[in-house]
Image (cartoon, rainbow, N blue to C red; front, side, top):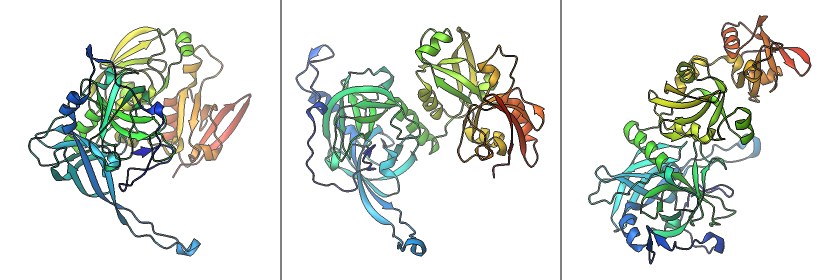
Length: 452
């Protein structure tokens, strides 16, 4: 189980400890399920718990080289450790099991124990650290398939059950409610859209199932927020829809090939929705379109509001980012866009971010996030240029003294009216790039040396 404050990747050994769990972290059983009085969850759990497995992993912890010359530290050799986690059976014929990537990282030997006590050696099919999802495989018969639910249908307040192996205690069941949805913070993984729950989960629950009252898998338990090794009622699970998409890519390709649309977008606030005459604050507004990207080819423009991708309503920029991360390059997607308040339908073919980076890697402009100034001031005739939205501290532009909010109006003596103009000039620049900028009420010259 991953900790967000006191970080532990997973339980490296089954330890005996006593934890005082606040009453607030305990959830009561719902009075009814599907309109019938609830007596026990046992009948539902009897059908699904055989699909949750215990995973023991013998892994190699990398050593450190030491630094005897500087501080006398001796090299530390690699060491073996035991990790305990959980997993969910997603394919009974092939023996595929979905779990967390952090459980199987650096694995040497993996042993899966089923509810009936059978034990099997497992092999790694594929793993992705960005989503913290992995697929392992066992050769076994008479497996129980975990029913997959639609995590897009979840609501805050829904009752859920967590099943896993906290501290190695396999087939442990706890209950709670969904506390929040679409959690993009605190930052844990590269792609995240977590379900927050108060169902008690602890080290060893990682990779286990978060189940709804219909007995369906709706999330993979992954992390907890806690000051120490104990649950305080703040846990996080990867939505089942994301787990399913990532697992399918890992099984098919052995890895996740994230796609790219090629936009920079920001969340729509109520104030922004009112100013841009949008019906509500759902969706994202495009602040920049990457030249030559699938977005530009599809006709997306700055100030467009993306409200839906295929059948997925877009709530915020984190959701759009995650969706592109699970979309394989070459996939065609339908975009529902609001342009000047009017609905527009666009078709885009998702690109490969590696190909895009190769095409657009310009030494002088790396680390810069830019926008046409005319996008912000469409009626302005006094200033034509490119606004610096953000800049990396270690970039060549930052070294030259460029700052966010600077407006680039000339490059190598040529007028710059758009990001395209600046890229074109920079691509053909020689040993340096001379910029004329507006900063506040002053005009300045800066020289950017190529970023090596």
